[in-house]
Amino acid sequence: MTKITFLGAGSTVFAKNLLSDILQFPELADATISLHDIDSDRLQTTQIVGEGIAHALSVHPRIESHLDRRKALDGADFAIGMFQVGGYDPATITDFEIPKKFGLRQTIADTLGVGGIMRALRTIPVYLEMCRDMEELCPDALLLNYVNPMAMVTWAINRATAIKTVGLCHSVQGTAAHLAGLIGVPLEEINYVCAGINHLAFYLRFERNGLDLYPLLRNVVAEGRVPDEDRVRFDAFNQLGYFVTESSEHFAEYVPWYIKRDRPDLIETFNIPLDEYIRRCEVQQAAWNVVHAWIVNPEVTVDETVLAKELVQAGATEMELEYVKMLLQGLDQGEISNEYGALIIHSVLTNTPRVIYGNVMNAGLIENLPSESCVEVPCLVDKNGIQPTKIGNLPPQLAALIQTNVNVQSLTVEAALTQKREHIYHAAMLDPHTAAELDPSQIKELVDAMIDAHRDWLPEYH
Image 1 (cartoon, rainbow, N blue to C red):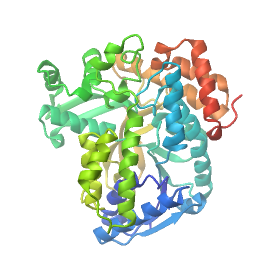
Image 2 (cartoon, one colour):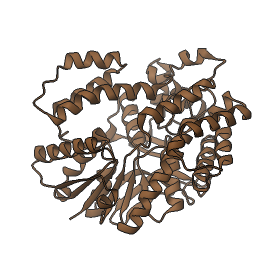
Image 3 (cartoon, rainbow, N blue to C red):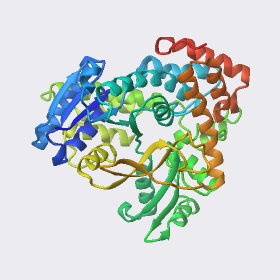
Image 4 (cartoon, rainbow, N blue to C red):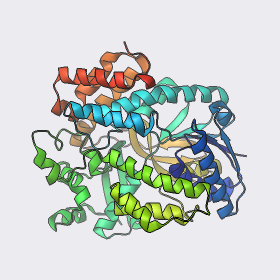
């Protein structure tokens, strides 16, 4: 019987998606699902969700919950990382509010920048403890990492442990579907090759029956059909010649071009949503308060009109409102989501070949990026596990841009593994957005303030 351990199972909504995906495969319908979290209430809620999904799908997995991480990991075949150290309040709020005092505004702050650096520094030590447990209790298990900052975390795990791991995101397949809609071509008819690093990968080929579809994307610009939320990355497309995988709000803080204190006009011109992650967290919390009550007691009647009004007041978008309605309509989604996790597990167990996009160590896969960096490339998955595809050289302008982000990742991982404060300073100094706004002395002062505020989640840096 296959054992799949969820690390951070209190992320109930995300766990729900993965559980639904997993249990829809007949070969996984009787798996042992081992849920772990440090929050007993959220852990219990996810167990209720899992049992509800199993009932709706008429399958019979063994679903167990553990506050003890070692019990959850003992004998696991697969582990899925999906946790956030420090949570929204106070850690994420701190990642935004302290930099703001220095005049440094952010949008998402979970991948790069000062926010991404601090998120990595409080996450990596916890993850390495988990991996040491895995080395003892399930050394052959495959770790599917969904935790951000993806590249830094996956890099640290590969460098410091013997655990087999792949970092997973939905930006490649999600953006491909988005672009398909913009150009009016069915996604299933599109063939693409994408490569780079997580959140900063580019579609090297985007084709239909061998025909290049990039001219259709250029028509979107020429015809004035660029969606408001896509202004940044369509501008980057115009400048670089290739389309990036991650959203405009992410990309805007990976480069020094769009968020500037002395150019407030850029914020409006490119529709950049400052403090966007904070807004999303507030919406998610408002939705969770209702969804949680309904999960625990399905007899509770939810007035969707009142709920929608509350979520709109919290700043919810139409897409977010639709998603919450979907959650309330039933526990089983009835179809596989666009996440790769369940597909990987199924492919490894059944030797069903599939291609996914994974974050792995470079080791020559992309020749004009550092060999020791963590890259996102297409990977074949079957009983042999994750087998990355060699890409060769990226277009030079893409490699050069990506290198600016790799510099920050490399120094942050070095800081996490050596506990040397100077590497945190240097990582922040080389961050494109931070360096565009602050001078070295300001950056050092900001880093010191962030380390002090995060002291409860960090080891001692010297």
